[in-house]
Image (cartoon, rainbow, N blue to C red):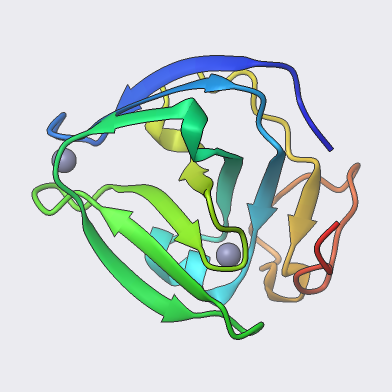
Length: 141
Ligand SMILES: [Zn+2]
Ligand SMILES: [Zn+2]
């Protein structure tokens, strides 16, 4: 699935890291996996997936790499000063940036096209039920 072109920009909480996107996201998803819950400190993350060639970023980041349940490596990057989670990469999808949507200024363009790891969705946490909901990660499209 592809989306209309998105042009937006944003930064981490302290402003040391800045990011811009200009391109067509390949996917937008809400993820309830345990890694997203622990990394975000809340029920799920809303993430936009876009070719890294459509991303410009500046500023130092620190990464934390973890093995996903499919055996790939997901590296989550955060600002070493303020701890904001601002960027991710998965060896499952080389060249594709996974960006938590809260980093951006506008965000009105976000609309999840899938919700994944719904088996971990807490009763108090809400995500879109009008789009495909998967118990875990669906096979790559
Ligand atoms: Zn920062
Ligand atoms: Zn996740």
